[in-house]
Image (cartoon, rainbow, N blue to C red; front, side):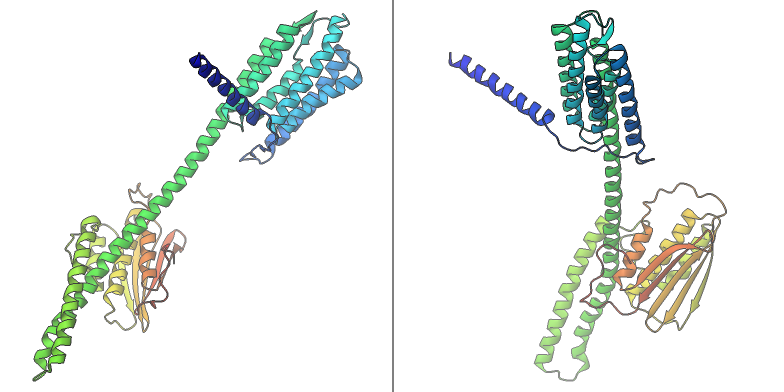
Length: 440
């Protein structure tokens, strides 16, 4: 007995939940505007309003003429059905109920005329213009609500049709229930398919945006790791010099005091420990992100190797000229390394994206830093597809900003391109860290 009671309670609970779902889905007046068209913003709205006006005129003509209904009843039914199509543009669920109520009122009024023999062979319970109005309502509803709600709306429509035609019935009429329900099912399927397609395209757009952002973020992190690896080499060199000088210094002083020996020994010990830690971190960076085409233990390039880079680029088929202005002088290793990498990336971009072009590299020294300019003419033939990630400019900007400089890149002299970077010789203040997004 207890098992029967449990099953009965479970059945009651399922019915209660189902009724709750129906209440939330179909007994609502929430606004759900129709998304505007992408190519002409309000064309769908104008089309629906025009269709609703035609439904109003056609419904009035049919109900007043062929149906012989009173003017008040005809206007009430026609206004309800055409108004439901317009209301569905913003509130599709209330529009569904308005259309069903208007159809029910029209069916009741027409049944009286059919039973009295005043009309014969009239389409019932769905008049042709009522079918058109309800098709618009169901299509607009299924475009914006979940599939479950669309199926519920079709079920309610089919239930009303069955009650009117199957249970209540009339005399001397042309049955339209089966045809109407089939047309309504087609409208639901079409609207659901269009909604799924729109949502799939929107999701694809979101995923494409996320993928591009993730690719840019990953490229930025990889470039920062590469810069960190290169700068660690520079810092490791200076730490080695400090260690050696601290070791040699006591031998340069005759009878150095013990306190000096202890301080210099402490400096050397700290330098050795820092150097060991730097090399450990450097080994990790090199093993995880080796530079493309370079050995992990290769020395970091400076501007002294710029001519070799230009020669290699010429050997690849690109005409490159160089120029220098200002007083040539050694710059901090980080500046020379970044300048070399910017020229290297800019020339690589010319090779990939501007076949047949010529390039000119200019190094302009001034008392405060170095200006690097790489310009190229337009391509003479179409560039082949490139397998690169398309984020070379991101890395160049990151290098310039890291040193407190700036970099601009854009079209130059028609179809050409120009990369212009300024790298200050002094490091940026410690209180002003470079931007974290890598922009200049």
